[in-house]
Length: 117
Image 1 (tube, rainbow, N blue to C red):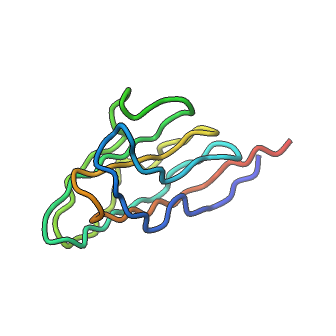
Image 2: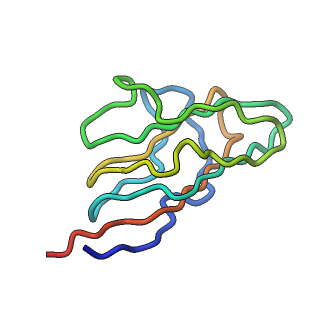
């Protein structure tokens, strides 16, 4: 099985404010993916809470707890260490929402384990 280093999402702006319709950050389409690093930047003057889900195909964010939840201080960039090592299954997704719209930007890097048969 081949491994490829990839940007799972790059500087994605979180505009959703509900788990009923979270923003899609990544879909694993060629095999499993593993999160190796993740950061979020808050460029606003107020703190904002971020909710990130790592979901198998067919599972809604409303039916499970977030993989990571954190309040991001105003004007800061932080590492989301709790996501490191999480596996996105083949055809699974990473989705997110925040308690306020359009102030948080997320970047997630990792590897994909390509299905080569």
